[in-house]
Image (tube, rainbow, N blue to C red):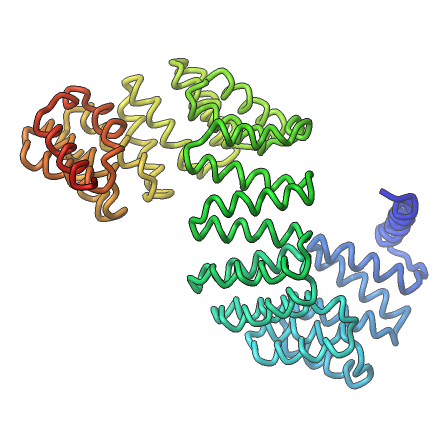
Length: 472
């Protein structure tokens, strides 16, 4: 913090203290206009609207002709949803100050809040002619925001492209362009826009970074990694570029390479909860439990409110057989994030493995009420029915899972396993073959791990052989 900023901050604290003492003692003192504006803005920013309104009332008594205070009066009216009155006041002010861009911007905001998109856009465009060009990108973004809020993504994209030309280093513009093109299912267009900026300035790390994200969306992994590399070469402290690059390797199950990328951050890792958490994920997937615990604990210490870090500690300790200790971490995660579906699934798993079936059912039901699109929920919940001897309910659950989630190999492998346990062998083989056609490589993890006795089943071996032969 600069000395000047500290001094101004101290001065404002003194002014605010003086003002609040005046209110408390029910007396009136004189404050200059700028001081009133600062006090108003302080309360308004903290959403203390009644206090901001009181400041305005006193300020207008002392400075009755201030247009700045009248503008703030319009802000209060807008916050109170009195849009017609706010617009009426702003129109009067514009008649007196027709070249004031702030008035047009406030008018645009009022029209937007009122649902009058076209008029809001018109006001934003009017503001531009009275503003420095360096500020235009934010106005174009506001216009794009209007169209985005009305689901006109193509029109929004037009203004975002203009904004990007004005300021090719504004992260938010790149992000909004990516969002709009994702909705339009044309991420290739975003990539081309980013490349256009790179052609103008090869050292634009923001353009390289978002090119990498666009390429990731397009499943052009090697090119995406190269783009992130360029961003990192330009700015070695570009933390998010390291993360995105590492996540690409993690998505390919290349956890060793992901660890290598994250560790390139060096000393920065010591202070970054997200970096430690990602390292924990990598080591967990490599079944290196000690290292996984180490980094998950680091993440939790760096950010005590990081619920997923606490949950991951619980998951590892659960895998290591320390059920009671695991339970304490899972409950901590739930205290921090009461609707953490993964935490409820893990809670159900622990209760199931310790024979507390009623509590397990309760946990899975709660998880289902939060989000019924998690594959592990269906697998683990249905297995609880198997363990309690209710194979029919397990089968019914898998039938429902397929309806909810669609044709997913994990579900069909488990569905087939349950039919096999139920003695319906022909149905089981048919389901397992459907799953293998989707992803034959999953059969070891999703079927043989669950029912090891099927490893040497001749019918299933024939299914695997047929599919591999067909693929070749």
